[in-house]
Image (cartoon, rainbow, N blue to C red; front, side):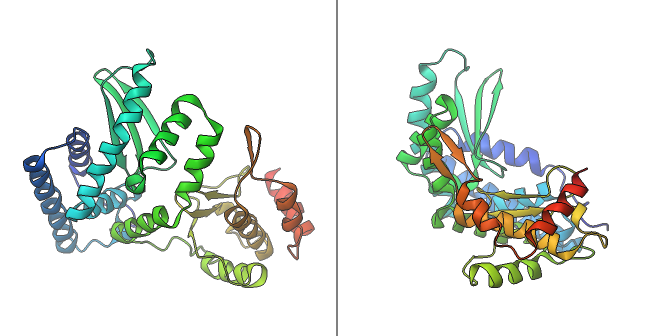
Length: 303
């Protein structure tokens, strides 16, 4: 079987049904029934993978995410934590939407596999707000800030939410989900191994203090964006364009260094605006040993 081609039929529809039922603040009998359905499906999924001799690396990224979500909620304590998080999130969301005529009620809040901080979908039967699963660790203050960010573009609220996604608690849930999904090493390219490059950059420029984020190559070639640091997922993406024998290794190292600076320096705020590329960032970036040569090569690739 080709890598990343296996999908389990019906998995997406099952998760969507569970999300709907969990969004309604289920009572105790319903919660026990949901736990039974989720844990049973989790076991059947693992048995199916075993019988078909399918490894995690053969699953599509979406299927891996759903697998991890189901396995996470198959634990009764995590399931109850999920329900509690929805219960805490609902009051500030509902209070805000009742004052805004644009959105159609009722509202349903989903904690699901998601890139980014939130996603809104207005449907005929109400508004769906999707948040990343690690938001199960959010408290009332966090959800209130999230609502202010989503519906009022409040910059201070956005700062609070971004800081919360970088917290040890949030990233611990992220790490657990990564294990349950079936961690796949996407760092080894044809020419360069991102794990080895991270180790060199971490040792040479950060004294080995940076905790390893998830490292992966982009799925496609790019000519504009050669790297990205995902704050929510704590992940560094490097463009597959750079995994080429004609691209010097120091270029990949420079992009890795650039993204790790984002991780370590974080965002800076001035009034209502946020800045990732500050004067401090540019000073630190120039400490890279082959800074000028790497910038020139990246400029050539972009053209």
